[in-house]
Length: 81
Image (cartoon, rainbow, N blue to C red):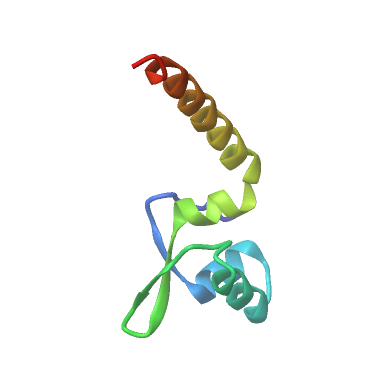
């Protein structure tokens, strides 16, 4: 079993094999922003943490929930000012 390293940089073909999806699926994920990547020399490079986020959306949802909770508390704190 291959492990995704969050600090590694992957090409689209490497990401495709790690996620076990087709070439058209990788293109669609990139196009819709589900998988974030940087273009280097006309080719996409995807960070490992983006691959992990794509396969584990529960972690992303938990992080969003924590952020929104903190934001709400902050707004309540500064409202009297």
